Image 1 (tube, helix red, strand yellow):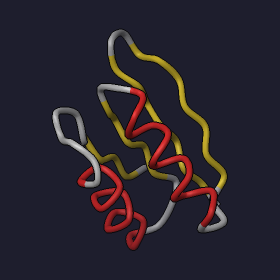
Image 2 (cartoon, rainbow, N blue to C red):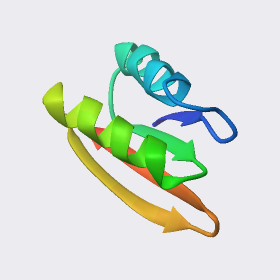
Image 3 (cartoon, one colour):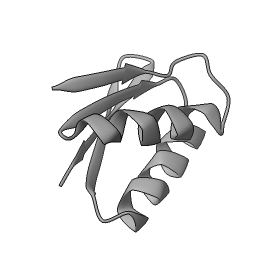
Length: 67
């Protein structure tokens, strides 16, 4: 499973990192540290036809993207 650690980055960087990582396939796990990238990545991936889920992990969030 591919993983992207986008914690500490401001949007749109987490979305761009996710877009690039999806070129390697799914499933993909993206780690972020606030709800703004969760919402932006979810919107991007959903619009691109992916299934997206997220969960809180401590103070961070884990977004799972799959086909």
